[in-house]
Image 1: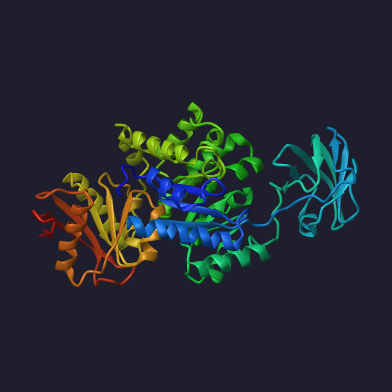
Image 2: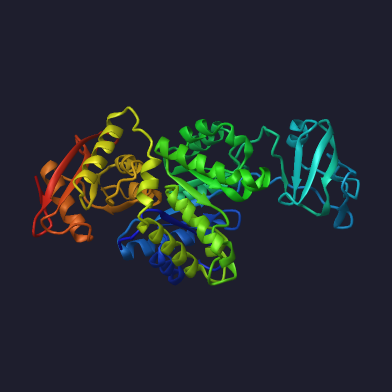
Length: 478
């Protein structure tokens, strides 16, 4: 099944999309990989979803990626004696370590790490930013705050701290248990929540030990200041615009989205744009015009993937949401101005042999107007390098490694085929042509460009470019 767009679609599974028939329909509508949110998914259900996705994968013969999204720390208030209170602008309100039920003047904050890290002048956002407090007096036992934006506050509402660098791990005991269960099940990507620093990613990678790739979710202002280090430590990036928009002024999020997309592309790391992309389709079969423009913007920016959350997990129209996103991607990429926008954003190649080869292959393919750029890749790194260049022709990645194939499901423009490794260079060239011919990328008599690493089968050795003609049976030769 060949996609007619380069950008990938990541669809979240949930109550509206958990059976075999629905997951099959989502894949047919355009989903390239699936997200399992561990905030709402017990281990048994996670294993069931993974097995169902693998069933769909085997029936289509196309690698499908699976991303497990860890919940991360959840910072919440304690309980109120009457269940809720009304906070007034300008009043004093205290957060403390006393476990007694709260009232209109105070409430328990069952997180000593917050009280230890808070400083006067720091903001506290309650209930997704609906209520805003400013700390005026802080200690390890309590924080006296002033209410800047008041409102109703009830039991266990969430707390966000945009100004406070919390000395907490990105992974809770629940996350560690969820992570191990996911790794045993054989998922491809782990999305790490609450990332504040590169050490959070490094800590997760030590537990994962190469069994899955790590996608850092950027949802904390603290991560913005350390973005370069986080990108270097990660395998991919997710721009989690929902939480980011709670802790930062909303007007900053679009520019940060562009900056993160370009930084990730420069580093050769896939980047996913997430949250509220087609939010109205939770209840409506059609999106708003503004949502369509939002999705289109991510496509024009050259993001690797765009994500559906509640739209596909719990909405009334999950298939329509995926189909809509698919059509937007196809239409944007048909726009005559799309290539010029993508080309203008292309970063200079890194000073490595692999990146130089990828850039040269892209230039040759575009100069000769070749119909496909084919990568033989063991680990997937060759295809990622080529995709970083955002070439005009489709990228066909051939790998003997199903794990690499599944991880490439999130990478821009890559059509991945899992096949037996080539015996030698002649076999590699011949079968590259056959596979591209079979999947409809080339016709007999056309030429293709092939990128690989020699010796074959050794990861990270991208060092060869070949141009070959496709014969009447699809086999290619020099």
